[in-house]
Length: 162
Image 1 (cartoon, rainbow, N blue to C red):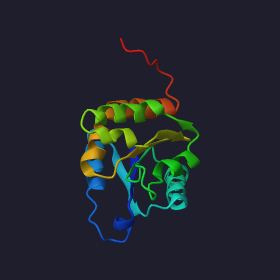
Image 2 (cartoon, rainbow, N blue to C red):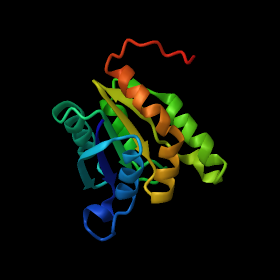
Image 3 (tube, rainbow, N blue to C red):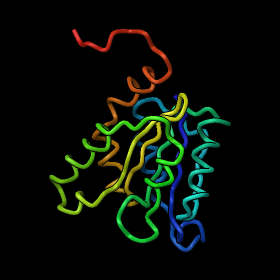
Image 4 (cartoon, helix red, strand yellow):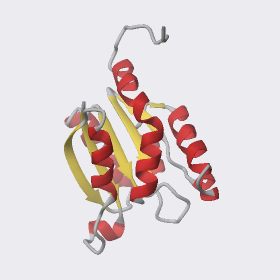
């Protein structure tokens, strides 16, 4: 599984903050055999985020793109908006599961606007910006990711479990 990680952070992009969420997400993705092909830190700019998502999906043809940061309600939080601009299908169950699990830990989970969706053969997942929030949310859906990618890419096998 070829994956890319985009950290969305104005301060990170200006090198005013050490990014720890990207490496933490990479470590979790390694548990399902993902190889990180591309990793970047970019500012909270809707057009820049959308452009990178298209590049990762269409040009690099990654199986999975995970974003960290910009999923809340602050004025500069535009990651879900940029993601909606480029996906062809939304996968609401992933975002719902992440919010439900996060709600067990913090009441602030209800203000997450993170989404998951599909562009071509690529699954795109938005995660929170904090290392803890990003890894906890990712772990909630981790076991479903390989199956989702297989289905997105045309696996004809039955989905039912024995």
